[in-house]
Structures are given as C-alpha cells and as structure tokens.
Amino acid sequence: MNAVLFTNVQIFDGSGRERFPGEVLVRGDRIEAVGIGDERLAQDGAELFDGAGATLMPGLVESHGHLTWPSSVERVVNSMKPLPIEQHVLVTAQNARITLDHGFTSVYSAGALGEKIEPALRDMIDGGHVPGPRLRASALEKGAEGVLGVPPGHDPIHERDIPGLRAYVKRMKDQGCDTIKFLMSSDEGFAPGGAQTLMYSEEEAQAIGEAARENGIWLACHAQAAEAVKRALRAGFRAIFHCTYADEEALDLFEDRKSSTFMAPAPGLLYARCHEAEEFGVTRAVAERMGAFSGLELMQRVIPDMRKRGIRVLPGGDYGFPYNPHGRNARDLQLFVDLFGFSPAEALVAATRHGGELMAMDVGEVRKGMLADLLLVSKDPTADVRVLQDKDNIAMIMKGGRFHKRPMVH
Image (cartoon, rainbow, N blue to C red; front, top):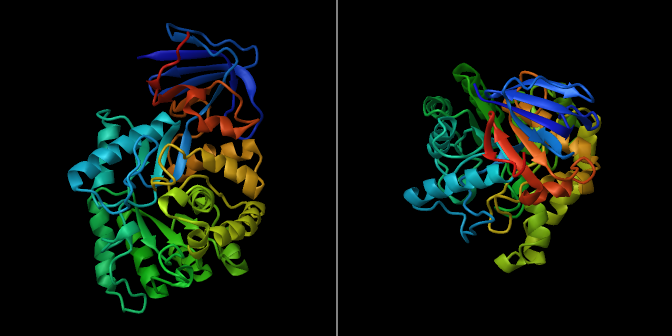
C-alpha cells in the first residue's frame, strides 16, 4: 500500500485551531497519523516530502457547484444555454479538472444543465478515469429547459401535479443523483421582482420532501424570499442557497434545524455582476436591475445573524458564468472575510470542515482516519485567504492519497 509522509509542515487541520508544526502520514487513501510539534512519525517505507514550513491543510469544498455551467478561467463561453450534448459533457469534465487544479477536492452540486451528466461524471471521477473533485451529483428540477434551469412558461400560480413531482424525485434517484435542486423562488436576475415570486406551494414542497425521504435522496434549493426559505426548511431540504430576504421567523426556523441544514449564499456571482461584468454587457444599471447590489447589502445583514445563531454558512457558488468562471472559486473565502466578518481561519473552517459535513464524507479535516484530501500551500492562508486564489501558491494537491499535483521538491 502506497504511503507518504509530510514532514516540516505547518498544519491547519480544519478544526479552527491555530496552525501548528507537525507531520502527517498518509497510507492508502487515508490519513494514518498526525504528529504534533516535535513528535516524529515512523516512516515505515513511506515516500518522504519535506514541506519546508509550508501549510498542509484539507482540500477545499465547493458548496454550491455548477460544473455544467460552461465558462472557466481557461475558456469563456458567452452563453448560458446548454451546449450540444457532446461538447457539454467534455466542457463539464474540463471544468471538473480545473476545479481540482485550484484546490477544490470536493463539490456539492447546486444543479446541472441536464439530468444525467453529473452522475456519469461522478462515476468516471470515482473510477479514476478522469480527474476531478469528489462530487455530490444533481440535476435541475423537472422540466428545466431554459437558461439557468427556469422552465419555459413556469407559472407559480399553476396547480402542480404532485404525483408528477413525486415521480420526478424517484426518477432522479434512479438515475444516480445524490441531490436534487429546486427553485423554491425565482430571482431578480430572472425577472424584476422575481426574488419574491414563490415557485412551489407549501403542499408541493411537503410532497417533494416526503418523496425525497422515501427515496433516500437529498434536496437543495434556490430560495430568495423569506417564505421560500421557510417552505424549504419545513420540507427538510439539506442545502438552502442565497436566503437573501430571510426574516426573523425564517432565521428562527433555520436555527432550529441547524444540525441538519446548510446555507451557501454565493456572493461571488453578485460581486462579479457589480464590479467585473461590464465587458459582458452587465453595466451598473443592469446589475442594479438584477438585484446584485441590493443582494450583497442584504447578505451583509442576514449572514452575520446566521453566524451568531450557529448556522453553517459555506463559501462557494454560482461559478461558471462568463464573468464568474470556474477556477475563481476561492475568491468567495475573501468575500466572507471582507463582507461578512469572518476571520481568515473561520472562512477556511467553513470551506473545509463544514463543507465536509455538507458532503457527508470523511473530508475537510486533517486527522487520523480521514480521507487524504490535502493541499500544501506555500504561503499562510490563515493570515490571508487571498493566497488560495493563485493556484501557483498551491504546491501540492492530493485526493484520496493520490497526487493530482505533486510537490516539486522532496
């Protein structure tokens, strides 16, 4: 069984404690031992790497992933409509590799353009056939054919066929999805006032929740309006995205369910619309009309309250737009610091340990028995999380005990 010993490293273990000097022994796909301070681990034939004082930390978790969204730092696609399927599958695989290249060893999907691409990609990654992060695979909601998964003619007043919703949940489970994304509300980016437009009734949400529990599949949702957040919480959704207009009642409900529910606000997209999208036609006036500026302001009020209540708020989200491409994901950590009052270490905990809890996998911490998803970072991200935005600062990427990026020097 292959073994690797990292020595002379500063360890950020994901727990929230300060970095500490030590050693980490990896055997097979797991961390076998962590030595603290002067404690020396037995090499036992392991390949030895001297980290020269660099930071060894858990791989990052993208908690709101859209790998089928087409644009990346390597290739901008000026359309959000689905590509021809042959091209779309290849672009999605490329995006998975790029995400891993930038230190994200796990991705929780927030929806896909297509029902079958992500489960197939996950299986190819897990089989070792293509490079990419661990993936909790999803599909968009029933009938999603339009841009960003908004079904054509989607009328929130129209009475839903609840048996059809239940059948859809079962079909997604049968197709291998781990989670399903529903739009519990619309969005200002889709239509003026859209954030307050509810897409599912209480009865429909409850039916979706019941079907998910019966079929053993998780639920995630886009929820802007306060009532959309509350309906998702009452229905048992695992991941609730945005929560921009969450009111006191919604926050109380979230706090009651904080042991089983996660929130990922995805500020990166709004920030990009506000400050970096003009060359793509998103002027300041357009960004204001799409609710980007007001959305960031609302997040700055809601998220600190969530933190005080112990609700797990996770970075990442909505990468894959031309002006917010895959590969830029680590910027969300700095936005958590600048906009929401997280310390760098707190942002890192959210992107590692809490992300691992969302994934429900043995990832996100450097401790004995965990999967060996590890980064070696040449600078100190606990002092400045911006160093993770430059992949050249990531000297080593390991997933499951295998090098995706091997350190240059032993």
